[in-house]
Length: 403
Figure 1 (cartoon, rainbow, N blue to C red):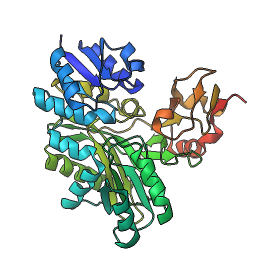
Figure 2 (cartoon, helix red, strand yellow; figure 1 turned 30 degrees about the horizontal axis):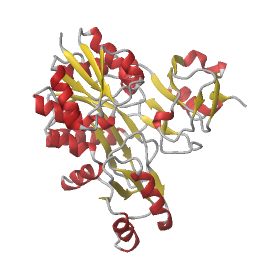
Figure 3 (cartoon, rainbow, N blue to C red; figure 1 turned 45 degrees about the horizontal axis):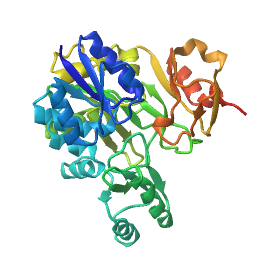
Figure 4 (cartoon, rainbow, N blue to C red; figure 1 turned 90 degrees about the vertical axis):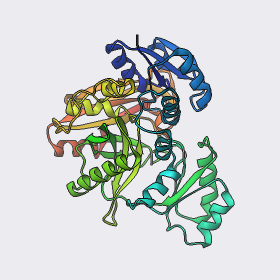
């Protein structure tokens, strides 16, 4: 039996495990948290830190795996590329190329070198040097965004408007960085909604590209954590075409082959369109599953096929069969979960409710994606319906805490 190793054990791995099992593949999950939910559904669990590349490689060799993936698990993406290269397994591309995509500093520098639209950005390990650059060297235009170079899910991200707040933001970013490195970049004032969704290349050709409307909760403790998504995107068609072309150019320059990608893009008030992130993995927040609802394209199954070197089936550009939205259920306060309230007027739009907590469980304020308590998938008949509900979602969906 063929063996697939999945790095990470969050619930986002569950559809990957199911897809692998449906293909007759033996699944090994690996991370350092044995209580993670995915390990209950895999065929075997290995306790190892997936950011320790050599330790994970040793286990992969011992288990004689045939493929490896880090779907919706950002910390394992580079490790998966490292192991694939060492063991001559199917991979999206070289370890070097994946490392560029997974480090925000290297990625920004690569984009700059190859004349992509890119904000002014610089990565640091020295706090004092960063503050000196921000203070007097004209490197940045205020406001700026401070991020860890190696984290996802909006962890450690802060917008900074004043120099006196910069050190606090840097310290916060470093608390989420495994490499003790952070990046400062110009804040790109977006026009309309930014986009965060999944796409797929086959043998180096971008066969399926999607854009969406990424929505935020301005009342959340971290207002940069995505709180909802909707498809199709409201982005200008001209910018969607430009970004699709630029993403293909990026894939070609890096020598990438077959993979799913989680891609963040935005159009700015300066009239330009920007590639903000491009990670060779499925996105969190069940984006690939939402896209399967909306288009019928089996992105999760084909991610497994790509990892195993199996033929890719049914990947191509397809229209959305309606107007779709996903709500990331969350609380803006710490407390004890009581119930999920959904207004009766939108019940007919609800296609799927996936609640991850039970009454009496402690929930945390929505500071990062990992504090979500579930998802809600909705389908609308018109764009007008979608915008009416999603533009006022707090009136229709509430996570109720005990008083």
